[in-house]
Image 1 (tube, rainbow, N blue to C red):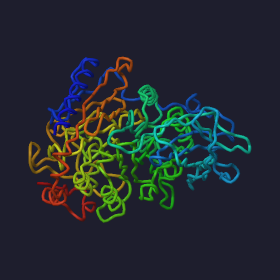
Image 2 (image 1 turned 135 degrees about the vertical axis):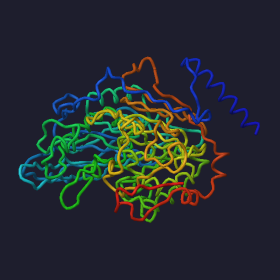
Image 3 (image 1 turned 30 degrees about the vertical axis):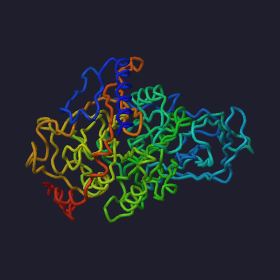
Image 4 (image 1 turned 90 degrees about the horizontal axis):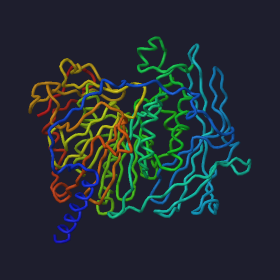
Length: 562
């Protein structure tokens, strides 16, 4: 107890010094729940901007055909990392012939000194095609996509590497990355950048430029990356709304070269900093015969096998003293399914003495007070929320809604000091523009037939207790919504120790050099209060939510909970 008091005293002194430097009091979650605050959209700004053209310098290919392009890193384990890149030229047209992956080797040369590469690892390569057998539509086949896993890395070390095929020779220039510390209650990533719904607009460039200035040690990308499906297969100009712009399209088309442009756009960041991704609805990209997610599944390496999920749609990984769980909202999330079984097993294996922080992420938010996507994934919440609460998840990041919103700690729509802190950061800057309407604004409450998910059932509910009793929407900002703002931006999570972390959301229009964090709070874990005292969350949830096994059959049958 004396040691605990000493640590708290030291922390209080540290926070006092930080506040003196920053010049403002930074609240903690212990000060909550907070009175809801809304910062309305600044009418002097544009709602959004057009996509960058493919001939923009940040999107154009800069290396010869056989040389590595779109280089990216991803965490594999505490001692291994994935290196991915693309060689060869993608093809688009009515008749395309896939490249032969066996014609180019997949090699990474690396070491701990610049210019010296005593280690070599080899990996695998593949191609994918996006086919549209409709008159007038163009088909696409990718360049050769390489994935190499570097194993046996030393924690907390800097490594220099080149990738490519040494026999041609066609090796990349030298890049550098730093491995994270081993999982420990005393070691954490320096800064974790969180961004979602990024796209390729001028707003996206501002987001990424600010994010790079923040010098993160890893990036969490919570879905909806390049928005290739806002285009026809013939390219041209993308649209904020595909269905409105192209009502006669025979299928939801996509212009796959946008993915290649996005990979080049991100390379200055991802060639040095690992980026962990999870799929969003804009990654579905349907083809005929039920083929979906082809680009997402082929382009990105994630630790699915390493974490036992064996599915790129959901997986987990450790980043020093943080255990991350990435969940899939566009595959089966029901309590009887494979993802739910894997999630329960993964949570059981987490040792909070080694990885005290437990952070989850998926694309569509469960708690959202904007009109856009309001209660869209209520079914997923009802299937999974109790499990996450039971095991004491600390923070949840989502995107999908193109705005920023931070919740009070909440469980089952009830303020709860042991509930996760839900944060929506779907404001990366994409072509669909910023969301400005709130479900509690007059005339902005969606109908029960709005916001139908692209996967899963419909479980819209009316509130049966509290200020919104008997209603589908609140008539004021919900008590579980602490702060919301319609602005583009990104977030930075800095873990201080096993119980304190600093969350800062940076809005794009603020000057980074002023360090003017738009929303900032210390997130405080209370394991002594929450982890030992969590009862059977499943029983609690069943008592408070009236469920239906046939929710998707009747979209107008709104769900109620007590």
